Length: 228
Ligand code: CTP
Image 1 (tube, rainbow, N blue to C red):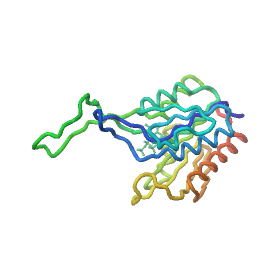
Image 2 (image 1 turned 135 degrees about the vertical axis):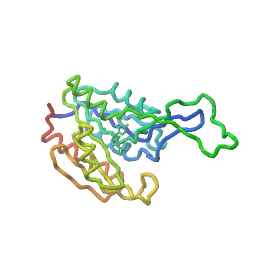
Image 3 (image 1 turned 45 degrees about the vertical axis):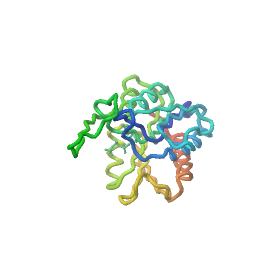
Image 4 (image 1 turned 90 degrees about the vertical axis):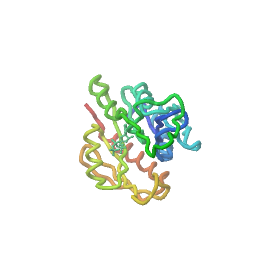
């Protein structure tokens, strides 16, 4: 069976501390962008939901673009686009926590205090929210693909997330402990499938890796993807 729609998420989300400061991460949006351009050659309707990505990664050809700010906004946008026969590829790096209260005025340094305590609360897990909605509302023909960038025990962490988030596939890769951010060097990924299959791709540039990930998903889902 084929998919009628794809949702690709990309880049970091932002959680505001006060009007001039936010919590975020170093995701550039490069992988999500290339995946979206590649998926546009495969699936008729592609929605690209992105956080604050670099300008070059804002508008993949052949996609509808939705720009969001926070993890909750991204979650709402994904839920709003979810339909029967959707493949969701969560390449975004949503912030896991947000300040419990975002201040209306700029926080000032207080004389004499060397510390600032910020209370953070957990954001929704988008993939978990989507997989429960699919189960609860019996939305047919959907496929969920997650990513896991890990510094240690890649297989254990990726397999754990595959199960806990109820995914069909998870794309895992190591991020070096001595590398800042997500890096621009060639990458190797391992795709873990819920069927137990493991597939290694790379090392290649992010552009080529994206093409190969999409080719893998296309091959797998077109030959055998039947989800109850
Ligand atoms: N993800 C999500 N919602 C979040 C955080 C992450 O849907 N609030 C998705 C990411 O887009 C990715 C997958 O979950 O596809 C794994 O993200 P990752 O940050 O590696 O995992 P976490 O569940 O946040 O776990 P941890 O940060 O503790 O490793």
